[in-house]
Length: 210
Image (cartoon, rainbow, N blue to C red; front, side):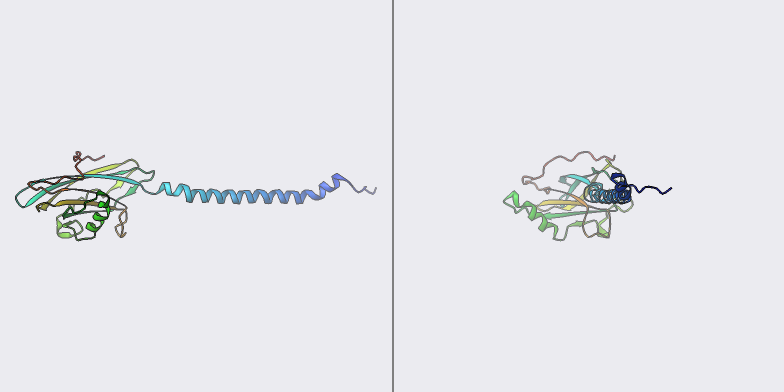
């Protein structure tokens, strides 16, 4: 018996079904590609920056007379991992400068201190002859999320009348890097008989390790 050829809607649907299936599959694939691409874009533009190591630092400086020719400077520094990823500090550098306070406008202090930092320091832990701690260098350790470490550096600096001390601690995750990841600095008058007003007179907290 000869089969009657289907006509109408059912015939058209049967012919178009493979094409319809191909179109739906293509659309689904494109949605998957674009969805994956958007997720990857979001990860690198939004999520990755938040995973970068983050830290906050603070410090204070206390200065007192040690003898007729030297002042004793206690430089307290704190470093805390306030990000969402752990990190390791591989290098700590400590420097100190003796300078004359010549800035009449406090708003110019930032540029003035940059000029001080460009001059040779009176103390530099990068110098092997400086006597800096060699057995266990402070802050060189692993920092889990929320971990913090504090240390008081004690320096004996030359006593100069009407001068100031400026101390700075730098921290690097990569010792080969030319720039520091984080730093903290404080300044205060030297141990003069008549000390000048200090722009940074907060007391030094008790150092702690956590």
